[in-house]
Length: 624
View 1 (cartoon, one colour):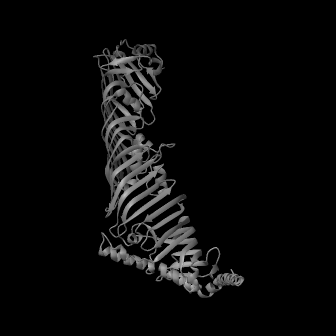
View 2: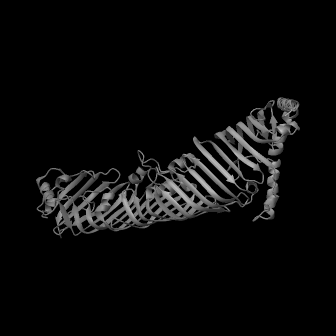
View 3: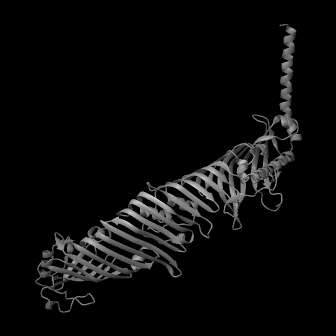
């Protein structure tokens, strides 16, 4: 190749490089003179629909990307000049098109908001959302899409959607605030993430992280038809929310119109429902430390009603299935449905839906029934196997109902202790205070097992029994219920035995005189033909109206009082040969002339249920 051509080529390359260098060097000068602050503010206003002001002078950077750095940027409503800005940011970084800048235009694909503050307002539906702009390209695009949706709600003409480019908006270390009670309060902090929306008629995604109520949260949203979604049409969406207390996801079709609806699959999981209630500040105090809770269901929501179909629920790893219905058309939300479990912890169930079980913490604490003013509940459930504390149940059919200050949990049918159990727990809020009513009917049960579960292990007849318990009292705390309850207890027991009672040794001790512990004569069993107990309850103290056990040769009777809350005993009793009436007064106290009944041994029973002691008050010649 001739050397002249080589020299010319080198000169041409050199000139081109020089021109490019001069253009690059001139960009900041060009930008500072032609892409001025007002031009950038105007372009941002045209997009957002807000009045954009930039207090600081733009700084133009060329490397590594051509961008403008703006400071003290605010976005405000055009019509509310005295209101605080909807969005304000300490700094905004805008990636610009170099070629557009050389032509005097502003074209940017990415905007980064550094330390923005976003002000939101509570809507009529209770949501916190920023103010909606009255104009701008985004608003006009949504209006166009809304017209297409109105023309054909089922299948709008997507080909007519605006195709204006949008780009990416990033935000770093932001916060969300709201005016509550006349004071600005921070709702969300450490807000970071980005929204990607290439064009108005394309798909869009949003990812964000932040700190809400002291917990780190992450939100992901995506839609293939975001413009249709924002215009109130039906569009596919995916949404996920993750935090340490709980996680939630939805995948389906949704519409945000006046007749909003959702239709898709939803999942919810929480390691502790109690922690979720406390974190969400729902105003419903949980009743116990509940374990893991998870729900997966097909969800259909429309017109103030949400249906959960083919629902799988797990409470403390006890799986169940059923259907739930949430209605928001009344003054209070209504929850109804049916759930079926293979195994179920009734205490966890009650705490999950109606927090009316003891907390299990130190002391029973106060009973909080304020939840009865926040929801109406009507649930039917069944369980093949269930537990209620130490009690094992089978084939359980139950209901939980809350309405107008009344909370009721009924077990209409269940198998336990070899027989049948029916029970009811009722909380009734009244002006004078909450009243609690407990009812229990145990039919054809193992009397010994039933008594052991109730905490009674001494002087209890063992055999097939029918037991009825009715208690009613003020519900200030769990202790107060049993300390102040009024009601009745009755039981009939068929042929069986009095365990841990050596009657000959017992009679020998009474003949010898002096008090002795019942444990001293607990090395035997007395067969009985039957037993009957009737007691009235007043202020937590049971007065035995009748307590008799009949054996082949003897009758054992007791009368007096026993405290359920304190477990104290103050009883009198006797052993009488069968067929001879017991020498006791209607008041339940022994006759003043026990010596006139030579075949009857009388005694006092004191101490506690767990450690009773016997004090003889007469001697007789009674046999077994």
